[in-house]
Image 1 (spheres, chains in turn green, red):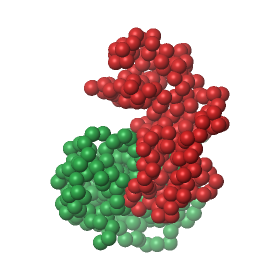
Image 2 (cartoon, chains in turn purple, cyan):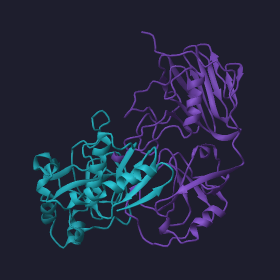
Image 3 (cartoon, chains in turn cyan, orange):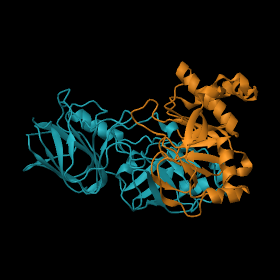
Image 4 (cartoon, helix red, strand yellow):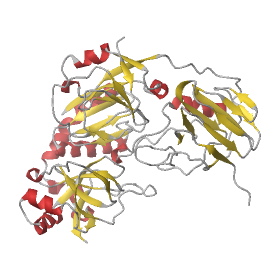
Length: 287
Length: 213
């Protein structure tokens, strides 16, 4: 019996996970949405190789990874600026690359940004869990993060790769400017807290992950002490724990939480590329 | 009832009481099923219902205001009129009452261990909401005066199926995880199965009885 087409994981890297567009619609059962931290970048990678946008690819973090592709196929990498080597041939981000069977694909460490998304024609065909193949690092649903020696099955390609030479993957800006929408618990903070959030520079803390981007900077003083009864959390919610340091919830966020939410970041995708130490500034929606 | 803004695509319905949370959850799920409401997530919690993935929160807020009086009226109706309150619909959870925190709970409640067991098995619980982990139910039904503190130091590993108490809630751990609730027993009932439909055995709104295994 011949082995079905697969990706063999030669070097898994710091954190490489299977991601698609996640499993929204189950939050009432305590199931996080999960999915690619920058869905647009994964969609683009999928379009470049002729996949439907919801196909599963790999989310690769900071240190890169090395993979062997057992069949001739087309791959594309989007997101962070990373060196790509397909066998002896260099590749570019944002551009489809056709590779022969047995190719060793090396994604190097990110030169800028943190995360890249690899799409392979046919998509990664691990069994879906609640409609998604995404690894949820909080609840453990979906396949575990990749380990050296893993073998991931590939699906059958459905369409030809996109007829494009390359696309534009802009480098992440040195400083992030995030638009902040209203939060449900502004009234749990002092009147100056929201202004302080808008007027201060924060930095991304090293303990940030797929659950949330932790920030360090001006503490946000509370007007109401004590615990808030658990309530539902939206993507991008800026939660303020007892120490006053804000945390922005990303794709693997818990479905409920007990700390007050002061605001909600309208678009969290730039945070997917924010390295620890990156400066973050917030501005209101009216600007 | 108060509608609180949550960014550009969500609203938080602040219901003030658990009974209103349940009434709103039930109404909003029904409305969505009927096609009156478009929302990706309708998430009940302790005092609130989150509506997320709304195409137009302003329109949804107007709908909620229109539906409010009917929802409030529903909570004041006698419970016998509600077909969901049929005893036959209760999920029965067989529990071995051998949890390590039973003596502690008994002490807090000022009773002996057998009275704790009796209190739990004679309570009709309702799943107020799920959270913490997939399929973890927050069960209401115990009187407020029996609320319990969490452990000062959470356990690094609580076994799957552990039946536990904290604050005003009872809960059941669907899988092994760290946990700070007081453990009173355990069940073999599978609480979360991704192959089942729905995947959670105890969904919000479900009524639950615990029986000694």
